[in-house]
Image 1 (tube, one colour):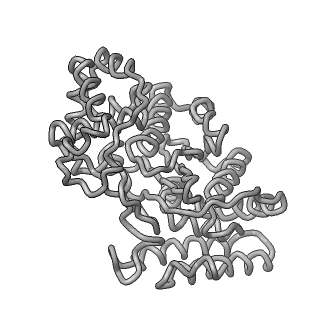
Image 2: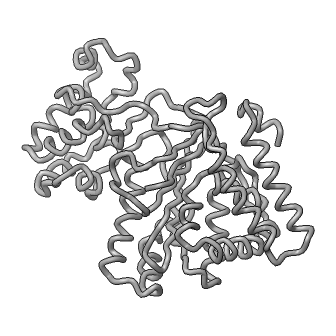
Length: 379
């Protein structure tokens, strides 16, 4: 995967007004057509998979740059535009109940694009496993509520999905891209961005968790009574100090889930998964099962999981003061140029062009600020 990632956004209540949606659709028709005409559908997917570009597009269309609603509204607008225009791209899924229709819509789009049944099945699996990874393999407290699947007539895809944390009222957005995708499991997010780093996040996609993942697979392939017994022993809070040997600074992160469906472990034993991807994709394997297996693998067998939040970059292309890496000005300039050129060529009146350019410029100025903590007060 060349370009993926997530960004963290505050939750905003309410709905986008109809007049705004109408204008966003009209403007996006022009911008999208020109981008696809100039760069092709593959490049459009790459752009969608770029968190900065996706955010900039939302701003150009007239939505608040830092709102969680930008994800759902922009995805919804693009879905409507692609459903009415023949651009060689369609969108399945969406927010809430619409996300539950993703599989059915992929079937319909696949048939419309004349894709083989085998390819359609692979696309449906990609949709499921990407959601499973971000909802279950990475446990940062952001259950998914939005899943948009962008599909081209060539069978290539990009996913934009978002999770919500009710406690701190923030949302986290995840981007996926089929291009150069080597694994659904091992660090599939290459350009992760965010302003908040959680102190304890179970990240089963980390490279350093490889031995833990392998041990999890071995555990479910043995007598299920053994793993059930180990889980029950670690669940006892009075024995947690023994298991951790008083060396764990953040004990809370190591607490074992209490409510588990033991039948899942028995069915996994009968299934005998070949690898961690098969284990994760198995029906009934949710966050609690993944966490329980990871804890047994680490505390009993000494195979360490990763408890580091997979945030790699702060907002935009890099961090302030060059930490954790300098801003990629070349990539930023490319994203801005593509959008600006599309606006300049769009068949819209001069007033709308000027307003769109101003919104883009405002977004550029905001993301270049050295102190992102002052951004909300500026809006």
